[in-house]
Amino acid sequence: MDFETLTIVMRRLALEAGDLIMEIYDAPDVEVRSKVDDSPVTAADEAADAHIAAGLRAAFPDVALVTEEQTASHDLSAATFLIVDPLDGTKEFIHRRGDFTVNIAYVQEGNPVRGVVYAPAKGRLFYTEPDGRSVEEAGPFDKAAPGATRPVRVGTPDNDALMVVASKSHRDQATEDYISRYAIKDSTSAGSSLKFCLVATGEADLYPRVGRTMEWDTAAGHAVLIGAGGAVVRFDDHQPLRYGKSGFANPFFIAHAPGVGLKPA
Image 1 (cartoon, one colour):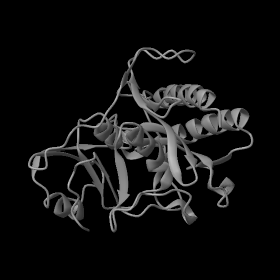
Image 2: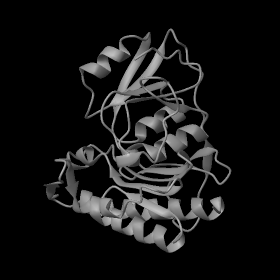
Image 3: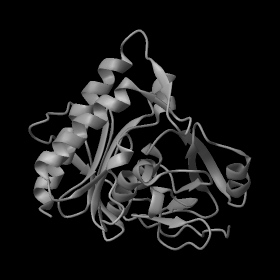
Image 4: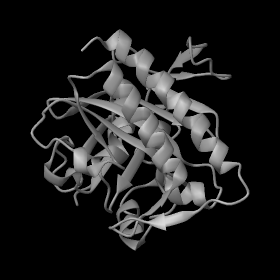
């Protein structure tokens, strides 16, 4: 893979998809339908998915592609593939809370090695550079050329005073019970893959997810966190979270900065 080209293409497509999403977000009404699994979907999900998929297929025709809204096209046999969640945090989008993202990632032999996370309503753009290191770009965002960037790096956690981030829409008792095992200075809630990015920037030390997610929900944020020096491990055995699983469903997991004393499941 030409990582220079990959970075340029993923960044541009994420920004373009963000424009499509915001056109619908700013409209007076958003039609919401239910998918087969009862999760919500909107015209924004579908428009962004179609745009990103077309752009990736044109740029990388020989690379397998997995997208949330085109499940029939998933290639389960590929160990290396592109994976897209065109609108992560659809519930946040529907309720006009702003915590939604465009996620595009490149998975190589089960590991998310490059990714972009764009939160158009919040004006935050995170991605991996061609060398794998993660940055946050300052707006306004020119689709043709990156603007000023700053490296993002996980913080040094204090296990007597950890910062925790958890899901805004899926923060349940199981999550609270697990968080209670740590010495917490403060906790916050965020939607979508922004939670990974808050750990990547040092704004949080720990993000436990005790609930269902799919690989397209996590791959881009996972890549950004790795590029910032962090890690994502399975909840049960603390082994690295891997991609390309049959059905693309994730186990429970923990995203964290190195140095956090992880508690057992």
